[in-house]
Length: 121
Length: 107
Image (cartoon, rainbow over all chains, first blue to last red; front, top):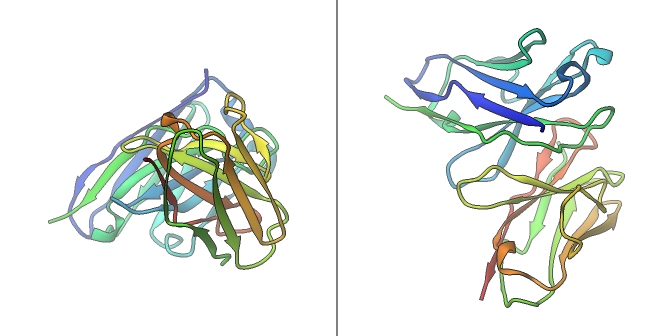
């Protein structure tokens, strides 16, 4: 069974940092693109960024809004994806989801349950 | 960036009704269009990819169509379990972008 489980969310002060994790199981992690998508309370979905598969050298893409503050990395030995978030602001308060794409495809299939990040003093 | 405009923002319909949601892209996206369903407090669920292909396990009352810049999600014979918010997304180019969502309520 394909599973993605996010963790690491919580309360952080403005200007602070946080690292989210996404532990995956049920599939070969290195074969798939994995993205981060976030959703502010009561709002729509916003794409954060992507890490590609081994065949694409694990390269990354980011939305412009996050390119200088957020970093996506992966530890294939741990079947885990990470989102390092720096210089957090109140508008970064959101549920953060990790999302998988099928092998050799670009669309999303499986979503994690999400982890809530609250930026507040 | 490609802007995705969904309409309507909300719709209320009766069980058994046909519901149509439209998504318009600001430029052609070559059928790289997906639809998601989200219920309150839950993660989105993938419904459709490549404009009209259903993910495994999605009921056949859901269908997608369209081309170029205009796409449609149709729910034939609306069921109580379909009460949710629906989002479209283009994955033709970066940054990936989503529509604003359509809330479907049951009368």
